[in-house]
Image (cartoon, rainbow, N blue to C red; front, side, top):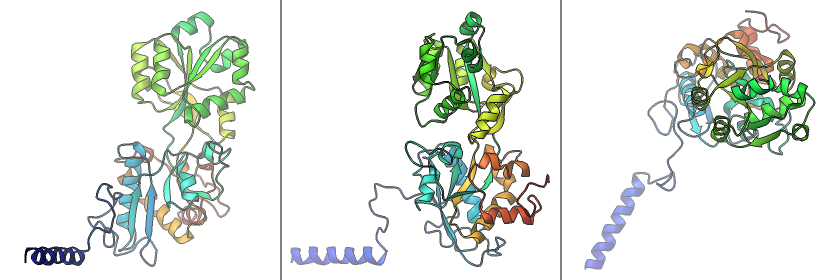
Length: 371
Protein backbone atom coordinates (compact mmCIF):
# COMPACT_ATOMS: atom_id res chain seq x y z
CA UNK A 1 0.00 0.00 0.00
CA UNK A 2 2.89 2.37 0.80
CA UNK A 3 4.38 1.79 -2.67
CA UNK A 4 1.00 2.36 -4.32
CA UNK A 5 0.43 5.54 -2.32
CA UNK A 6 3.92 6.84 -3.18
CA UNK A 7 3.29 6.12 -6.87
CA UNK A 8 -0.06 7.97 -6.79
CA UNK A 9 1.56 10.94 -5.00
CA UNK A 10 4.38 11.13 -7.56
CA UNK A 11 1.89 10.97 -10.44
CA UNK A 12 -0.21 13.73 -8.88
CA UNK A 13 2.85 16.02 -8.52
CA UNK A 14 3.87 15.34 -12.12
CA UNK A 15 0.40 16.23 -13.43
CA UNK A 16 0.33 19.37 -11.30
CA UNK A 17 3.69 20.56 -12.70
CA UNK A 18 2.51 19.84 -16.24
CA UNK A 19 -0.66 21.86 -15.67
CA UNK A 20 1.45 24.81 -14.42
CA UNK A 21 3.60 24.79 -17.53
CA UNK A 22 6.75 23.34 -15.99
CA UNK A 23 10.14 24.96 -16.73
CA UNK A 24 10.24 25.76 -20.42
CA UNK A 25 13.51 27.63 -20.15
CA UNK A 26 15.78 24.69 -19.39
CA UNK A 27 18.08 24.40 -16.39
CA UNK A 28 17.39 26.63 -13.39
CA UNK A 29 21.15 27.32 -13.21
CA UNK A 30 20.95 29.59 -16.27
CA UNK A 31 19.22 32.94 -15.88
CA UNK A 32 17.08 33.94 -18.88
CA UNK A 33 18.15 37.01 -20.87
CA UNK A 34 16.71 40.18 -19.32
CA UNK A 35 13.50 41.56 -20.79
CA UNK A 36 14.04 45.25 -21.37
CA UNK A 37 10.43 46.37 -21.28
CA UNK A 38 7.37 45.72 -19.16
CA UNK A 39 6.79 43.28 -16.35
CA UNK A 40 5.76 40.21 -18.30
CA UNK A 41 8.64 37.74 -18.74
CA UNK A 42 7.15 36.48 -21.99
CA UNK A 43 7.03 40.00 -23.38
CA UNK A 44 3.78 39.28 -25.22
CA UNK A 45 1.97 42.18 -23.54
CA UNK A 46 5.01 43.97 -22.10
CA UNK A 47 5.12 47.66 -22.92
CA UNK A 48 4.06 48.50 -26.44
CA UNK A 49 2.10 51.57 -27.35
CA UNK A 50 -1.43 50.56 -28.20
CA UNK A 51 -1.76 53.73 -30.28
CA UNK A 52 1.04 52.39 -32.48
CA UNK A 53 2.73 55.70 -33.30
CA UNK A 54 5.63 53.68 -34.71
CA UNK A 55 3.83 53.27 -38.03
CA UNK A 56 4.18 49.48 -37.95
CA UNK A 57 1.08 47.42 -38.69
CA UNK A 58 1.69 44.76 -36.05
CA UNK A 59 3.96 43.51 -33.25
CA UNK A 60 7.62 42.69 -33.84
CA UNK A 61 10.27 40.67 -32.00
CA UNK A 62 13.70 42.22 -31.50
CA UNK A 63 16.89 40.82 -29.97
CA UNK A 64 19.39 43.39 -28.72
CA UNK A 65 23.03 42.32 -28.36
CA UNK A 66 25.29 43.72 -25.66
CA UNK A 67 28.24 42.94 -23.44
CA UNK A 68 27.73 41.61 -19.93
CA UNK A 69 25.81 43.18 -17.07
CA UNK A 70 27.49 46.21 -15.53
CA UNK A 71 29.25 47.36 -18.69
CA UNK A 72 28.44 50.69 -20.38
CA UNK A 73 27.28 48.74 -23.40
CA UNK A 74 24.82 46.73 -21.31
CA UNK A 75 23.35 49.86 -19.72
CA UNK A 76 23.09 51.55 -23.13
CA UNK A 77 21.22 48.64 -24.73
CA UNK A 78 18.95 48.21 -21.71
CA UNK A 79 17.91 51.87 -21.93
CA UNK A 80 17.36 51.67 -25.68
CA UNK A 81 15.45 48.42 -25.30
CA UNK A 82 13.10 49.96 -22.77
CA UNK A 83 12.35 52.90 -25.06
CA UNK A 84 11.80 50.61 -28.04
CA UNK A 85 9.51 48.31 -26.05
CA UNK A 86 7.39 51.21 -24.85
CA UNK A 87 6.89 52.61 -28.35
CA UNK A 88 6.56 49.55 -30.58
CA UNK A 89 3.09 48.07 -31.30
CA UNK A 90 1.40 46.23 -28.44
CA UNK A 91 2.48 42.61 -28.25
CA UNK A 92 6.04 43.33 -29.39
CA UNK A 93 8.95 41.73 -27.53
CA UNK A 94 12.38 43.27 -27.00
CA UNK A 95 14.97 40.94 -25.47
CA UNK A 96 18.55 41.72 -24.52
CA UNK A 97 21.19 39.02 -25.04
CA UNK A 98 24.60 39.47 -23.39
CA UNK A 99 26.65 37.58 -25.98
CA UNK A 100 28.75 40.40 -27.47
CA UNK A 101 32.47 40.52 -26.69
CA UNK A 102 32.66 44.18 -27.65
CA UNK A 103 31.32 46.93 -29.88
CA UNK A 104 33.81 46.04 -32.61
CA UNK A 105 32.44 42.49 -32.83
CA UNK A 106 28.66 42.89 -32.42
CA UNK A 107 28.21 43.51 -36.15
CA UNK A 108 29.51 40.01 -36.88
CA UNK A 109 26.83 38.57 -34.59
CA UNK A 110 24.12 40.60 -36.33
CA UNK A 111 25.43 39.52 -39.73
CA UNK A 112 25.27 35.89 -38.57
CA UNK A 113 21.61 36.28 -37.63
CA UNK A 114 22.17 36.03 -33.86
CA UNK A 115 20.52 39.35 -33.08
CA UNK A 116 18.88 42.44 -34.57
CA UNK A 117 20.40 45.55 -33.00
CA UNK A 118 23.47 46.74 -31.13
CA UNK A 119 26.08 49.45 -30.70
CA UNK A 120 28.87 49.15 -33.25
CA UNK A 121 32.33 50.65 -33.46
CA UNK A 122 32.90 49.92 -37.12
CA UNK A 123 36.28 51.56 -37.83
CA UNK A 124 38.10 48.25 -37.88
CA UNK A 125 35.38 45.64 -38.42
CA UNK A 126 33.71 47.56 -41.24
CA UNK A 127 36.90 48.36 -43.16
CA UNK A 128 39.77 45.90 -42.69
CA UNK A 129 38.14 43.16 -40.63
CA UNK A 130 38.84 41.92 -37.13
CA UNK A 131 41.06 39.11 -35.87
CA UNK A 132 41.37 37.46 -39.27
CA UNK A 133 37.72 37.98 -40.28
CA UNK A 134 36.79 39.85 -43.44
CA UNK A 135 35.02 43.19 -42.96
CA UNK A 136 31.31 42.68 -42.47
CA UNK A 137 29.27 43.47 -45.56
CA UNK A 138 25.64 43.11 -44.42
CA UNK A 139 25.60 45.58 -41.53
CA UNK A 140 23.94 49.02 -41.75
CA UNK A 141 23.55 51.93 -39.35
CA UNK A 142 20.39 53.60 -38.14
CA UNK A 143 22.25 56.60 -36.73
CA UNK A 144 25.52 57.67 -35.16
CA UNK A 145 25.84 58.87 -31.56
CA UNK A 146 27.92 61.58 -29.90
CA UNK A 147 31.66 60.99 -30.15
CA UNK A 148 32.80 61.16 -26.55
CA UNK A 149 35.82 58.82 -26.86
CA UNK A 150 39.19 59.93 -28.28
CA UNK A 151 42.77 58.91 -29.00
CA UNK A 152 45.29 60.34 -26.54
CA UNK A 153 49.07 60.13 -26.43
CA UNK A 154 50.58 60.06 -22.95
CA UNK A 155 54.30 60.49 -22.29
CA UNK A 156 56.26 60.62 -19.04
CA UNK A 157 57.55 64.08 -18.14
CA UNK A 158 61.05 62.66 -17.71
CA UNK A 159 61.05 61.39 -21.31
CA UNK A 160 59.77 64.74 -22.60
CA UNK A 161 62.44 66.63 -20.65
CA UNK A 162 65.17 64.29 -21.88
CA UNK A 163 64.24 64.18 -25.58
CA UNK A 164 62.02 67.18 -26.23
CA UNK A 165 59.42 64.76 -27.67
CA UNK A 166 55.91 64.42 -26.29
CA UNK A 167 54.19 62.87 -29.33
CA UNK A 168 54.59 59.94 -31.71
CA UNK A 169 55.06 62.40 -34.59
CA UNK A 170 58.09 63.96 -32.88
CA UNK A 171 59.59 60.60 -31.95
CA UNK A 172 59.29 59.38 -35.54
CA UNK A 173 60.63 62.60 -37.02
CA UNK A 174 63.75 62.49 -34.83
CA UNK A 175 63.95 58.68 -34.71
CA UNK A 176 64.29 58.81 -30.93
CA UNK A 177 64.54 55.50 -29.01
CA UNK A 178 61.20 55.30 -27.23
CA UNK A 179 59.62 52.53 -25.19
CA UNK A 180 55.97 52.40 -26.32
CA UNK A 181 53.18 50.50 -24.60
CA UNK A 182 49.68 49.78 -25.91
CA UNK A 183 46.88 47.30 -25.30
CA UNK A 184 46.90 43.96 -27.21
CA UNK A 185 45.71 42.97 -30.68
CA UNK A 186 41.96 43.45 -31.14
CA UNK A 187 41.68 46.41 -28.76
CA UNK A 188 40.85 49.92 -29.92
CA UNK A 189 44.17 51.05 -28.36
CA UNK A 190 46.07 48.60 -30.55
CA UNK A 191 44.25 49.66 -33.69
CA UNK A 192 44.81 53.34 -32.90
CA UNK A 193 48.53 52.83 -32.31
CA UNK A 194 49.04 50.76 -35.47
CA UNK A 195 47.05 53.24 -37.57
CA UNK A 196 49.16 56.15 -36.29
CA UNK A 197 52.34 54.33 -37.24
CA UNK A 198 50.89 53.57 -40.66
CA UNK A 199 50.00 57.23 -41.22
CA UNK A 200 53.65 58.12 -40.62
CA UNK A 201 54.85 55.26 -42.83
CA UNK A 202 56.71 53.37 -40.12
CA UNK A 203 56.42 49.95 -38.50
CA UNK A 204 57.16 48.41 -35.13
CA UNK A 205 60.37 47.05 -36.67
CA UNK A 206 61.42 50.60 -37.59
CA UNK A 207 60.95 51.73 -33.99
CA UNK A 208 63.04 48.80 -32.78
CA UNK A 209 65.77 49.64 -35.33
CA UNK A 210 66.17 53.05 -33.66
CA UNK A 211 66.71 51.36 -30.31
CA UNK A 212 63.09 51.67 -29.16
CA UNK A 213 60.56 49.00 -28.24
CA UNK A 214 56.84 48.27 -28.35
CA UNK A 215 55.08 46.25 -25.65
CA UNK A 216 51.48 45.13 -26.03
CA UNK A 217 49.87 44.38 -22.68
CA UNK A 218 46.68 45.08 -20.75
CA UNK A 219 45.69 48.62 -19.79
CA UNK A 220 46.59 48.44 -16.12
CA UNK A 221 50.04 47.07 -16.96
CA UNK A 222 50.56 49.92 -19.45
CA UNK A 223 49.85 52.44 -16.70
CA UNK A 224 52.10 50.59 -14.23
CA UNK A 225 54.98 50.58 -16.72
CA UNK A 226 54.68 54.32 -17.29
CA UNK A 227 54.43 54.99 -13.57
CA UNK A 228 57.44 52.78 -12.74
CA UNK A 229 59.65 54.23 -15.47
CA UNK A 230 59.62 51.03 -17.56
CA UNK A 231 57.93 52.77 -20.51
CA UNK A 232 58.01 56.24 -22.06
CA UNK A 233 54.85 56.67 -24.10
CA UNK A 234 51.37 55.18 -24.46
CA UNK A 235 48.53 55.48 -26.96
CA UNK A 236 45.04 55.08 -25.56
CA UNK A 237 41.56 55.11 -27.10
CA UNK A 238 39.64 56.22 -24.07
CA UNK A 239 37.28 58.70 -22.41
CA UNK A 240 38.03 61.74 -20.27
CA UNK A 241 36.84 60.05 -17.08
CA UNK A 242 39.03 56.93 -17.40
CA UNK A 243 39.82 55.92 -13.82
CA UNK A 244 43.11 54.18 -14.70
CA UNK A 245 44.48 57.15 -16.66
CA UNK A 246 43.25 59.64 -14.06
CA UNK A 247 45.05 57.64 -11.37
CA UNK A 248 48.17 57.50 -13.54
CA UNK A 249 48.19 61.28 -14.04
CA UNK A 250 47.71 61.79 -10.30
CA UNK A 251 50.56 59.47 -9.32
CA UNK A 252 53.12 60.38 -12.00
CA UNK A 253 54.18 63.39 -14.08
CA UNK A 254 52.46 62.74 -17.40
CA UNK A 255 52.14 64.92 -20.50
CA UNK A 256 48.90 64.40 -22.48
CA UNK A 257 48.82 65.25 -26.19
CA UNK A 258 46.25 65.17 -28.97
CA UNK A 259 46.80 64.44 -32.66
CA UNK A 260 48.17 66.51 -35.51
CA UNK A 261 45.98 67.60 -38.41
CA UNK A 262 47.75 65.03 -40.64
CA UNK A 263 47.07 62.28 -38.12
CA UNK A 264 43.38 63.20 -37.75
CA UNK A 265 42.94 63.20 -41.53
CA UNK A 266 44.66 59.81 -41.76
CA UNK A 267 42.56 58.33 -38.97
CA UNK A 268 39.35 59.55 -40.62
CA UNK A 269 40.47 57.90 -43.85
CA UNK A 270 40.73 54.67 -41.85
CA UNK A 271 37.20 54.78 -40.46
CA UNK A 272 37.67 57.05 -37.44
CA UNK A 273 35.88 60.35 -36.86
CA UNK A 274 37.23 63.67 -35.67
CA UNK A 275 36.93 64.25 -31.93
CA UNK A 276 38.40 66.35 -29.13
CA UNK A 277 40.07 65.66 -25.81
CA UNK A 278 38.02 67.83 -23.41
CA UNK A 279 39.71 70.26 -21.07
CA UNK A 280 40.17 68.65 -17.65
CA UNK A 281 40.52 65.10 -19.00
CA UNK A 282 42.20 62.76 -16.46
CA UNK A 283 42.37 65.83 -14.18
CA UNK A 284 45.31 66.88 -16.35
CA UNK A 285 44.56 68.77 -19.58
CA UNK A 286 44.06 72.52 -19.35
CA UNK A 287 42.56 73.08 -22.79
CA UNK A 288 40.67 71.20 -25.48
CA UNK A 289 42.95 69.16 -27.75
CA UNK A 290 42.19 67.88 -31.29
CA UNK A 291 41.92 64.12 -31.75
CA UNK A 292 39.99 61.31 -33.46
CA UNK A 293 37.95 58.34 -32.30
CA UNK A 294 36.30 55.09 -33.24
CA UNK A 295 32.80 56.48 -33.16
CA UNK A 296 29.75 54.46 -32.22
CA UNK A 297 26.59 53.91 -34.23
CA UNK A 298 23.40 51.95 -33.85
CA UNK A 299 23.64 49.00 -36.21
CA UNK A 300 21.26 46.44 -37.67
CA UNK A 301 21.31 43.89 -40.47
CA UNK A 302 21.24 45.35 -43.98
CA UNK A 303 18.43 42.84 -44.60
CA UNK A 304 16.19 44.32 -41.90
CA UNK A 305 12.73 45.29 -43.18
CA UNK A 306 12.76 48.95 -44.23
CA UNK A 307 9.62 49.81 -42.27
CA UNK A 308 11.07 48.33 -39.08
CA UNK A 309 14.36 50.22 -39.54
CA UNK A 310 12.36 53.41 -40.10
CA UNK A 311 10.28 52.83 -36.96
CA UNK A 312 13.30 52.03 -34.76
CA UNK A 313 15.14 55.15 -35.95
CA UNK A 314 12.07 57.29 -35.32
CA UNK A 315 11.64 55.92 -31.79
CA UNK A 316 15.29 56.45 -30.85
CA UNK A 317 15.48 59.97 -32.27
CA UNK A 318 12.20 61.09 -30.71
CA UNK A 319 13.22 59.77 -27.29
CA UNK A 320 16.71 61.29 -27.12
CA UNK A 321 15.84 63.25 -23.98
CA UNK A 322 14.81 60.10 -22.13
CA UNK A 323 17.84 58.13 -23.35
CA UNK A 324 20.26 60.89 -22.38
CA UNK A 325 19.39 60.36 -18.72
CA UNK A 326 21.35 57.08 -18.71
CA UNK A 327 23.41 57.05 -21.91
CA UNK A 328 26.29 59.48 -22.46
CA UNK A 329 26.19 59.02 -26.23
CA UNK A 330 22.77 60.72 -26.40
CA UNK A 331 23.66 63.80 -24.34
CA UNK A 332 23.77 67.02 -26.33
CA UNK A 333 23.40 65.01 -29.54
CA UNK A 334 22.52 66.97 -32.68
CA UNK A 335 21.08 65.96 -36.04
CA UNK A 336 24.55 66.55 -37.49
CA UNK A 337 25.90 63.90 -35.07
CA UNK A 338 23.15 61.45 -35.95
CA UNK A 339 23.82 61.57 -39.70
CA UNK A 340 27.63 61.73 -39.49
CA UNK A 341 28.45 59.17 -42.18
CA UNK A 342 32.17 59.23 -41.29
CA UNK A 343 31.26 58.12 -37.78
CA UNK A 344 28.99 55.33 -39.02
CA UNK A 345 31.58 53.85 -41.42
CA UNK A 346 28.99 51.32 -42.65
CA UNK A 347 26.13 52.48 -44.92
CA UNK A 348 23.00 53.98 -43.40
CA UNK A 349 19.99 51.67 -43.68
CA UNK A 350 17.47 52.85 -46.33
CA UNK A 351 14.73 52.93 -43.69
CA UNK A 352 16.80 55.30 -41.54
CA UNK A 353 17.67 57.45 -44.55
CA UNK A 354 13.98 57.81 -45.35
CA UNK A 355 13.16 58.83 -41.77
CA UNK A 356 15.80 61.57 -41.74
CA UNK A 357 14.59 62.72 -45.15
CA UNK A 358 11.01 62.90 -43.86
CA UNK A 359 12.04 65.22 -41.01
CA UNK A 360 14.21 67.36 -43.28
CA UNK A 361 17.63 66.40 -41.92
CA UNK A 362 18.71 64.71 -45.18
CA UNK A 363 17.78 65.91 -48.64
CA UNK A 364 16.49 63.74 -51.47
CA UNK A 365 20.05 62.65 -52.26
CA UNK A 366 20.78 61.68 -48.68
CA UNK A 367 22.96 64.73 -47.97
CA UNK A 368 22.80 66.55 -44.63
CA UNK A 369 20.76 69.73 -44.99
CA UNK A 370 22.31 71.62 -42.08
CA UNK A 371 19.16 71.40 -39.96
